[in-house]
Image 1 (cartoon, rainbow, N blue to C red):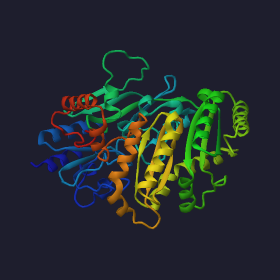
Image 2: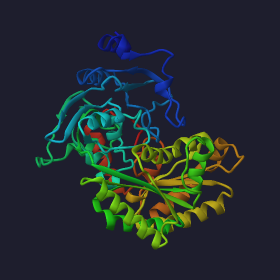
Image 3: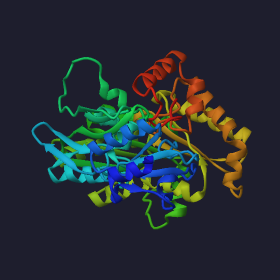
Image 4: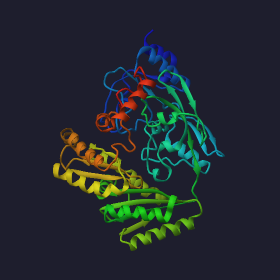
Length: 466
């Protein structure tokens, strides 16, 4: 019996997609990678995932795990060989348990992030992982890439929000590590091997996540700032005034919000165009009046110090959502403008103004007319420092000609300022060669040893990351 026939027998008609209707699984979100899958397996539970992996091991078939397919580095798209099996976790979308006393939720990998946020909210609890793709991305992929998002400043990356995992290993065994414990000092932390491994070591099938009490009040504002240095000073002032209550601090350059204005004119922007705009949010566990007092005091002090030239404070949850929607629309507006060169970089917050000034100048000198879409999570040092083709220049042509040289300039500057070439998107296929060149050789050797030990056949998402 052939591999596909055995797979069909194992999963049934609902669990296997084959033939010509695979395009949704074969193209990445940015449409940079288009592959050709052998088939798409859609297991319904962990036992079926394990059985699929064992079958693949027996036949030597490599596996590309896939969740919501919203990744930005080509990590969940098959190659063009037609020999890789896409293992889609979309059917595994159950919330197994919510433990209110322990402040945890145990969920399957195919749960859409927004559905988990809403399930927590229904219990007056908070799952703080939040990112632009939350309506379609899935928690397994969030954990496999150690996703960041807009609230890392207060709550940390996906890694910090995960207490335990269930994983199918490359041998088809099931590791049940779904602990809800905050303290468990019993050897190596296997959870941290799989979080951020991008499916190269095993397949995350379920997770136990941290929850928090829902804040009693949230205050959100947009603020115009004259310089990036002023934005960094504003961040310091906000930390002094709000402490751990500061849950969001995003920065956007004029061009990035200009793209939103151009492609989504229906979205009202309450402030005039400014060189830089900050979106800041404070959450308070006491009451709304306390939050408002702290927030208004912060903005008044910032205005007096010249750090802020104008501000718009949300007066309702709907207005707060609208302000966040502006920020979250930047990647979509950039996509509407055309293909672009994305840089998801991390830097010490103190180094960001100098990095941006120097790198802007280097890129403008080398590529006159290129346009910079610079935005991101200033509070945790993560910039999305993206390059758009000059006005009127075909984007695909500009990328094909200039992407390697642009990447070299940006990543050399990142290294100069002791940063990272990937803050929250992962490595995937897009940055694999950059990682090989720029990662510490000892660290690379350790990573390769771990890969060989856990996946000796090389079945798990091969040629990604390392």
